[in-house]
Length: 144
View 1 (tube, rainbow, N blue to C red):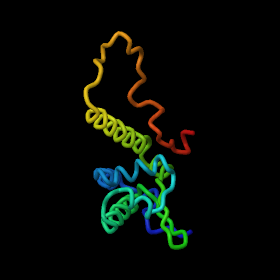
View 2 (view 1 turned 180 degrees about the horizontal axis):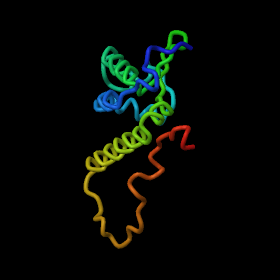
View 3 (view 1 turned 180 degrees about the vertical axis):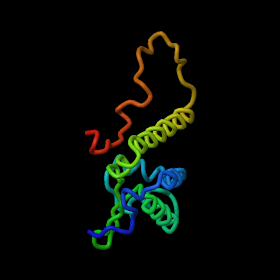
View 4 (view 1 turned 45 degrees about the horizontal axis):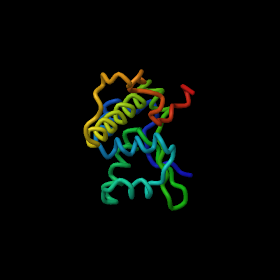
C-alpha cells in the first residue's frame, strides 16, 4: 500500500486539526472511522449523503490536516484515523472531540424523539456519567 501525501507527525498543527473537524461532515467521517477503524473512501462517501466530489474534498482536508491517513490499496483508497500521531501531538484532543460530538448527536436524537421522563423520577436510579466508556470510540494504542 502507498500512502497519499500527509503531514509528518511533528508538522501537524492544532489549528488545522480543529479547522478540519469543525465541519459537521468531516466530524462525522472522523466519528465513523473511530468506530470502524478503517474504511474505504467509496463506502464512506456513499453513506455521507454528499456528492462524490464533495466527499473527496472532505477526505483531502482531513488528510492534509493530519487527522486521517489515506492509503492506496490497488484501486481503492482506505482511510484510518491517525490516533497515535494525534495523541503524540495533542494528548486527549481527538477522544475529547469525538466524545463531545457523540454526546451532541445523542442529545439531538433524544430531543427529536419526543418528551422524556423528568430527571427527578423516584425510580430512575443512579445514572452513568455522560462520557461513559460506552461511547463506542476506539482508544489510541498508547492508552490501551
